[in-house]
Length: 171
Image 1 (spheres, rainbow, N blue to C red):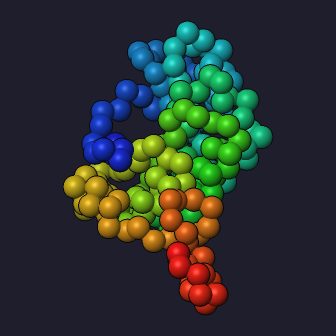
Image 2: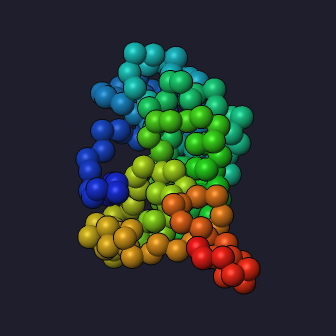
């Protein structure tokens, strides 16, 4: 896996695990599936942890871990599935202030939107990272500046800009 932040590639301090036994055996912080979170936290109360959540997870299921989780990794099944972007916005609005990671087969053209929705970093499978290296992600972050969705980003959305132009208001 390749981990990319707005500043470039970074090392991953977390190890993904898929069982409570693996959580007990792991050294350092782990990322656990939401379904195992309670048992893994009980098994490792003194070490940092992250949660792996599907893009259709409910905030109510994740919120109990806001105080303990150092990271939430939202799992994207495909680059065309935008539910993870919506979940990121809801997590930030609900008060999660620690590291938020987008994980899955994402593409560089989405990087600006990923960051604007509240993600801090992107975790890519090697196949995707080989097709679009870190430099391409960083270039896309600064190239793609307009977006259709409202409510995030620093500039008005394309739709808001069009509406303002129709009304004769400079955007």
